[in-house]
Length: 237
Length: 117
Image (tube, rainbow over the protein chains, first blue to last red):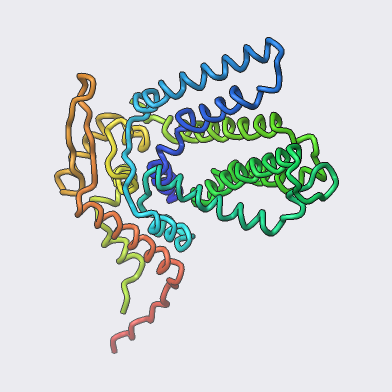
């Protein structure tokens, strides 16, 4: 066994709960897709698709936990202070020995990522204020117009989703195997900052929710695939 | 004079320096506790092999096991003991030092002994 194999064992055990894509990200993504992403479409095949996606999300929320428990077993995460967790990310950049740091449970981690995301988002918005209130190709200051308010909210949605994915990638030790979080995060942040110039069609609530929901489903599927790849191997009996 | 990489290698804890046992301890060091099925999946060991390694580690006082019933089935939970956590952390530190000293190490030229007479 190579040292990278032990490093992979450590990472997957530490992030076992997070990598259970069908338990969190996929159902949330499906809910977004069914509840809002396709709400602007009223034809019956799409209505049927919305119902199927919603039912699928509910089934996953109810049954995915049992599936993971029965298939891969259980690993209880170590409880550590969030500050210790954050400092370990900032200070331990090399080598498995330094990375043998315990993890924190999901709720503080989500709060930590959420707080980080909000802070970065606010700074980003302050720095890029005039383009953030861009409608089409024009730079207009906010005047309370509903269309403009909606455009700003869509920018914010892209920005928050993008920062959520970037923050998650950062918190997962900036690993190459988690690079899809980086890719999706950059794409959504790009939409947030540059869509008025390069993809004005993306400034539509339905499109934004479709993209954000699909991104969550994709990230959840890739997390699950990674878990199966590592935990799926078995020694010959 | 500091130990050569070979001496450091020879001094590594033999209870830990086995790929299967190291996998088990590395996994357990990254969580509070794990059940038998998870350990089997993450290490890729068979039930028999895993059971045998866990017994050795338990005898050495590095892990603690606990059995409980879940849905009329026995579930075996394994956690690192205090000693086990110290041992595995110490092992990785030694490996880190070993890697550094192996990078620095240069073979010394042997000086021929003067011939008698």
